[in-house]
Length: 439
Image 1 (cartoon, one colour):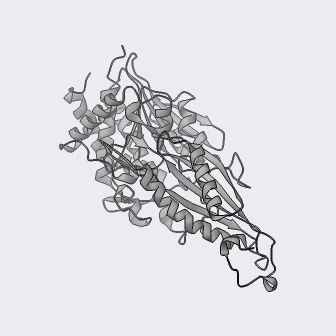
Image 2 (cartoon, one colour):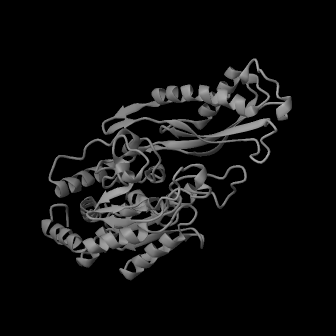
Image 3 (cartoon, one colour):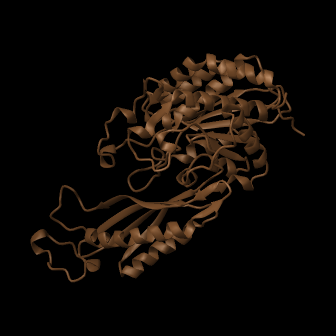
């Protein structure tokens, strides 16, 4: 076949139009499930059964309670292979009331249709893009097209993050290690990888790695409220570790901006801006607030540019403690590296095929540059690029993929027409890549 075989392409694109109701159903079915880590099982079972019901090979990869699903549309042989990958999970909702003010909004765990729009966290990130490539490959199969190469389809767990630390123990709090990388090393390997996520129809060829650190400051001796030594001449030396931590946080915020400026870099497709935030703080006992704590910790996330050594960040953080004259400790409890797809052999092939597929659907110039923060997060292109499989990310627009996005309901709205267009792009990409002969 070849990318210029317009008759086959038209058949598939027409079939996708016919499958609009199927696309909506799959997206709403999956989106209406609470698949927050580590509770992806219901969504995993749905995809597993859908693959089987539609005549694809279907395999569970992982444990009985938390498993990925790998589907295959087997080719005739001697063709290039392509894997689609999207994640089933959303962020853990355990103790969610400690991080979200309106934690019980339906948009976080449900999905519904409003006219020409689907709404739901799970649809926008990331079961909507998943539904698109599921229906795209179904359209190819239902059009009685057998490709030379295999199309692999992976619905994975654990992408939205988290890590064992303190009493939050493994395996319950494991995440990325159980998802795309596990699939890729257990039969889900292909010549090229398409990571389907919301990118506003732009191409994302790079993502940051990340590192989590626990920073602890110590103070002593503990004090009972009536004995507290007011006024304190230097809060950096307070006998209350929470007060000391407040001074550390003030300095950390300055450091965070310095870090961002230092590690920002541009390339032809956009700009990477790695950032760091404080995501949690612990100190003292809520049921005993009359005793000042001697120990207080913050937990921070760094988005790390490709090639950056996290041990350098550990030295930075220890330097902040020294600068402030504080006793404490810095621990790195998770690290995963980022990668640049253009450094992987074969990247130009998959990028060119994707650009051509996009232009055929939209009838316009190549995709625009991705917005900065789309290039500065973690996504599952990283484990594939790490393993030498050129991987890029592409998907429909949502509030999540727009410049200046805010964490509210508008973040999680998806136009049905945009989903149909993404489905068409994925189908054309599979027709192109999997029609290419191996040497």
